[in-house]
Length: 112
Image 1 (tube, rainbow, N blue to C red):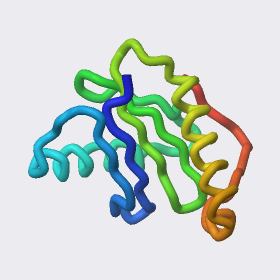
Image 2 (image 1 turned 90 degrees about the vertical axis):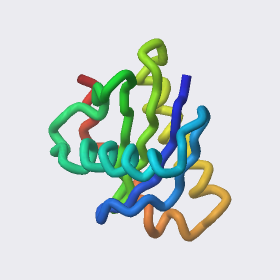
Image 3 (image 1 turned 180 degrees about the horizontal axis):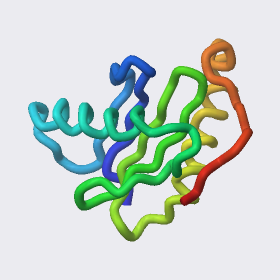
Image 4 (image 1 turned 30 degrees about the vertical axis):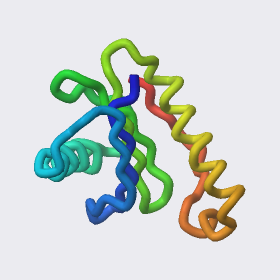
């Protein structure tokens, strides 16, 4: 099950957040800061799946944009990884300027 969905820039600023289970507002900021730090500190050669507390993080980077999805232990990481890409393709289709900011660099993918 998806717990949350975040879009974050390289400076660590949250651009979009959606929670699918209740998290208190004051705890969201702390959770987002820790999650963002975990993902942004990783190199491009590292796996895009991260164990974090009692859930997993699946993230993808498109140019200066990181999309991070928090999932429970039973969710399929590769399916979420593809979901992220499909989401970005939909954004690109409906908002033509997204293509200027989001690049579909399909070089090496790291599944762990």
